[in-house]
Image (tube, rainbow, N blue to C red; front, side, top):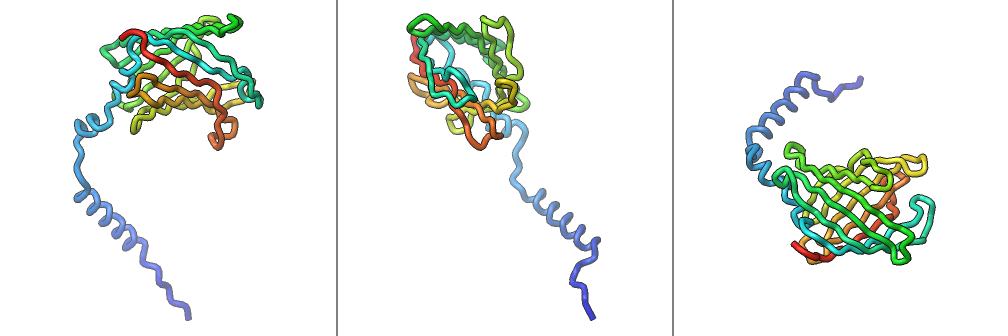
Length: 197
């Protein structure tokens, strides 16, 4: 004769409800204002405001196993708008042999509800803004921003990473992943030095 050791469903539900109630009653209280203060990233991109000399290293053909890089030099000018909740960046670089020139515009918008930044890129050559934006935030001095886009007819993940933001030479990397984020191919690297505040 088999005996069941299962508790009646009502007892199990009551136990979970009691545990949840105890947790909620004794969990540390954080007010909405405290949470916003802890997570407010509105000033995360303040380090970029001003004029910069920039060095760009760009992979010639992404997502094709290419190892050929081109190096470009130029300037970046960044200013705040919307009271610091957004930034506009003018980007202008050229290769040493003058065969490649990139003139772009980056716009960054801070969402105070999600505490995240959306970064949009436009290229003067195409005369268009590239959707979708990369979206993300800074944690422990590292900014990570992600999206999905199409490269040569294939959907890939894109990742932007900002580091060294408290130094005189902030570092930026852009990578793509064709395998759902298991591996990343570096496609764009910039280092910049302040020209004028």
